[in-house]
Amino acid sequence: AQTVTQSQPEMSVQEAETVTLSCTYDTSESDYYLFWYKQPPSRQMILVIRQEAYKQQNATENRFSVNFQKAAKSFSLKISDSQLGDAAMYFCAYRSARRNDKIIFGKGTRLHILP
Amino acid sequence: GAVVSQHPSWVICKSGTSVKIECRSLDFQATTMFWYRQFPKQSLMLMATSNEGSKATYEQGVEKDKFLINHASLTLSTLTVTSAHPEDSSFYICSVIHPGRGTEAFFGQGTRLTVV
Image (cartoon, rainbow over all chains, first blue to last red; front, side):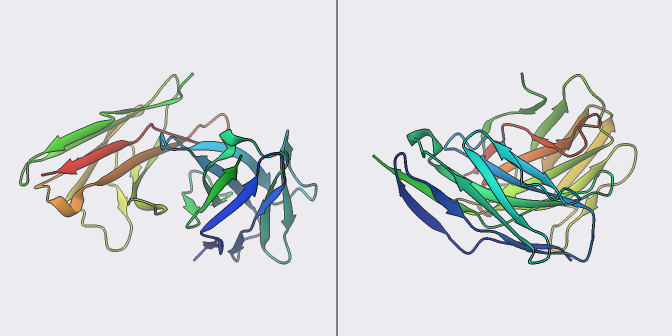
């Protein structure tokens, strides 16, 4: 069975600084997707960034980028120039490339932005 | 705009009653929808996979007779919490994979259920 592990329950970063959230996963599959979701106090799940496992290039979305290490099964999220609006719960997630397969979430990391 | 609509966003019910939560895909058909449960300050735990026209697939430990799932059409799945008890109080979220955007899942707004 696939698992997703986030070892940092909480993190804090100064506004405008850079922070990295860690995530490791376990799977025997070769084709899958990885995601980082943000959940603000409204609890609406917001997709931050996604990575297809077959792509070697790390995904980037504006201030958000990932470090995808397939062999190590590691998928960290880097947030640059942190802003107050980035404060939220961040979930690392895995989904098999099989059609209509479920998403498996890590336990989450609560990110605090210090003004 | 929203891709998935979940209703109601919050509900309070008395112990012993049943509550129905709806999840609708907007402007697209979804043969599969997922139901998650989230306790305060915890992660999303998959409860079941809703399959249009067939029985739902429940995760281990989830009581199928308590959490009834019906996926009667390609745009609607419902989760009914039967004979609700205070321990069923939680945040319930549905998710759908858009067929045209296969890597991404879309989430409903969630339903906060409080059983008193």
